[in-house]
Image (cartoon, rainbow, N blue to C red; front, top):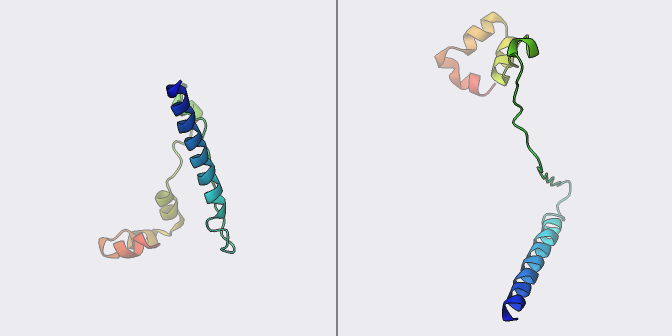
Length: 94
C-alpha cells in the first residue's frame, strides 16, 4: 500500500512539474513586443532511401550546395578573384 502511495505522489509531482513548465513557457517573454517563439514536435522521421537507379531518378545529379550556387551566379572574373587565397575573408563574408 505504501508503494502505491509513493508512486502516486511521484506521478503527481511529475504532472505538476510539467504543468509549471508548460505555463512558464507561455509567460516568459510575453511582455516583449514582437517576440514570437515557435515550437515543433517531430513525431516521425524517414531516412529517404532510394532503391531505384540514381541516374533514372535524378538525371541532373545532386542539387547544388549554397556555395556552388553562389559561385555559379558570379561572372568568371569575379569567381576567379573570389577564390584567391588572399580574398578568403571576402569570400567568407559574401
